[in-house]
Picture 1 (cartoon, one colour):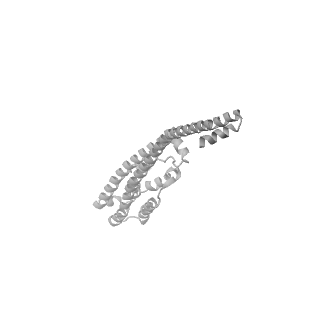
Picture 2 (cartoon, helix red, strand yellow; picture 1 turned 180 degrees about the vertical axis):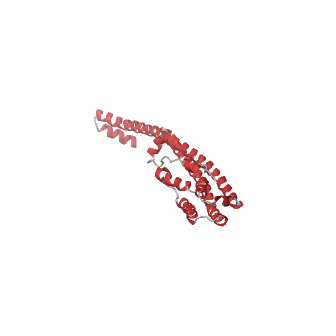
Picture 3 (cartoon, helix red, strand yellow; picture 1 turned 90 degrees about the vertical axis):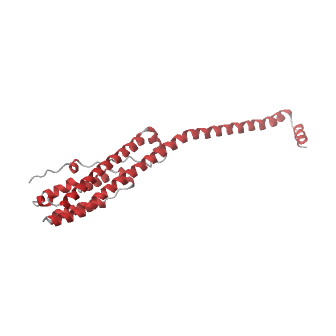
Length: 231
C-alpha cells in the first residue's frame, strides 16, 4: 500500500522533482552517517587525550598527599621536642638558681613554636614558612643551650643527671626532626618537579591551578650551630 502511495505521488509530479525527492533522503542519510562517524572519532580522540591528562592529575594528587603525610611526620617530631621543654624548665629550676627571665624566654619560645600551625596555601607562602621555621629554631637544643650557658650556674646544672638525660632526649629528637625535614623536602622537590614539567603545568592550568609549588622547610644555620661552652 505504501509503495503504491509513493508511486502515485511520484506520478503526480514532474520527473525532475521525482529525482530530487528520491535523492534528498539518500543525501540526508549519508550526512547522518558522516556525522555519526565524526562524533565517534571525536569521542575516541577525547578519550586518547583525556586519559593521560587524568593520569597526570592523579600523579599530582598522589605526590601532594605524600607531602602532607611527610609534613605530619615532621610535626609529630616537632611536637615531641616541644613536650620535653616543660620538663627541662622544671629540672633547671630544681638544679640551679637560674634567673626567672632565662626560664621565661624558654617557656615563651615553646609557646610561640606550638602556636603556629600551617595548612593549605600556607605551604606555598614563603613568609609563613619562614615564621614557622624561626619559631621552631628558638627551641632547638642549641638555642636553649645558648640561653642556659650564659648563666653562671651552668656548671652546677650540668652536674644534674636529670638535666643530662633531658638534653640527650632533646638531641635525639633533633636528629629525628632533621631526618623528617630531609624526607619532607625530598617529597616537596618531587612534587614541585612534577608540577614544573610541561605535562604538570598543562594539567594544572586545565583544572584551574589547584596546585601551587611548596616551600622547603630548612632550619637556619644558627639553630644547627653547636654552642661553645667555656668555664
